[in-house]
Amino acid sequence: MESNGEPTLRPSPDEARASLDEVRRMEAVLADRMVTPWWYSTGLGLVEALLVSSIAFPDWLRALALVIGLAGLGVLIGRYQRLTGLGMSKQYFALAGGWSVALVIVILVGFGINLLVDRPLATAAIAMVVFVATVVLGRRADNAMRYRLRQGVQVR
Image (tube, rainbow, N blue to C red; front, top):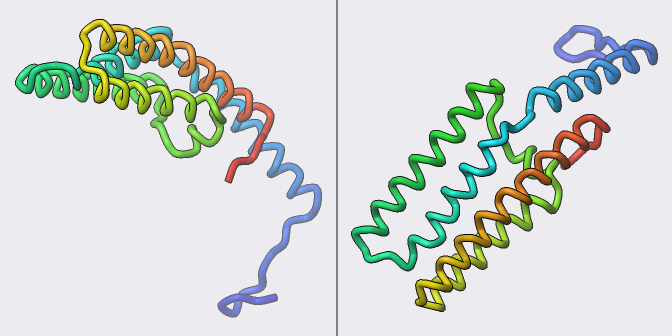
């Protein structure tokens, strides 16, 4: 076959196998680079707890909490990118499997309950649940993502 007047080169089976082996090796290297520092999930949990609980704050304090929370999120993401040279992508969430979905559900349920129940004690409890869920599920999502990278699991 030709395209644009030039012959199409096909790799030999050995060349194709060698290329796939190199891709798998690079995925393992990437998995090793994506080790999340201990403070990342903790910081993210604090930011998410602040954002979820901010619904119960008075307007002026809610605005301040949102600014602080979004700034904290930006700092965490920036530090992670500088540390690893990598950023988050939709592939991360696909590789992390159900753990990242579970975390998003916990956060959305937390927002919903805070909207329905206007009690300081309930807000504090929900913030604590979001914090713990972020730390636990975030670390499990990271482990799942690295495992799937090392195993060469394809996601679509």
